[in-house]
Image 1 (cartoon, rainbow, N blue to C red):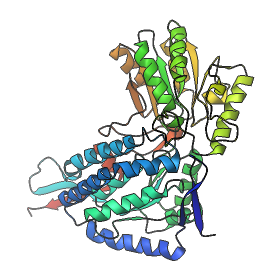
Image 2: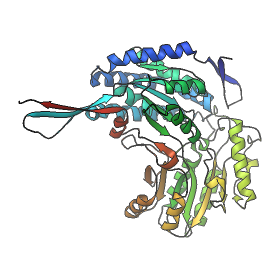
Image 3: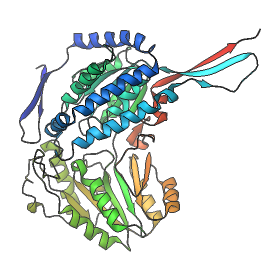
Length: 462
């Protein structure tokens, strides 16, 4: 079959049905992209900025419709999906605001008889492969900066969130973006691999699993093109003895359970100094028990389903294995009416008496479960935070900024937070270490990965 269906986790019905792109459509899109880029690269940065700004305006104007589509495609409660539109706008407008300065030629110190400078030249065709969990917030990191830099974009969105790709096309067309500068294709994984292998593609921006990242690397092997890979995390929080406990509890609960825990930079493990461990756990559990699990189209729901039943079953199995190994479960799932085996509706869970022999503390869960461990001091916390294959974000809760900075120097992570978590500041580089990926998006540095330096060495006096 050449069609696919998006099954909504809301009620397991078919929400979207589309056709996969044919080989002819893929070839046509690539050819159109290459031709469009020849002209787009010559467009003034100020004009690119103006078009992207109009596209953002058009996107924000559709906030309500986009929020509803998100809820039905991937299950986030309708009370929260409008926030993704706000996050999209924040990141896009920041990158637009710094584009002209970031992309301007870099002048070198004067040298008699020479003019020397470095231009940031566009790479060409950027292939963006985006996930379903934050379908706009992950994709905007690459799409808007790529277009601002003079590249053209070909987007493959998840089959769980195909309408997101179509919304991009709609707002770019309304903004007056020239034909071919942005295109989307609904494709199979095999077709996506063939696109990566095409000599017409110059950069791949992928967000997804470690296994998916390896597949992208294998597909691009021997082509010598750059890749941007964001591959997930097992992000830790550390609560020191001097932390504001109320703030730490509220922030880590939200960091662990927002979007039903389906966030690559969500909090999946927590280390708490023994002197504040008991009151922290007590307050944490109390707050989690106030969540309301329900249909995400209900505005009173605060915890929606995970994306599909198989994902829920994996989390249930991981939690069961931890309990069998000695972990203590603090949440009575029976008090959350919609939690049922084989269903994507899954009660939140808080585990203590956990350790790093349990997969719930070492392997990405990507769901509403978190383990909490007691630690004796900063060094033990650092050692445990670093005991992972991932390194996307990590955080500390403390009143001591100096201690936070020193601990952060020792933690292997792309972003280090003090007294907050699960947030992207578009002025800062979004990057990871270890198996969390490679490359960088956002901030002024993000443009460096979507352009090539070209040096001009002009001898003016003979």
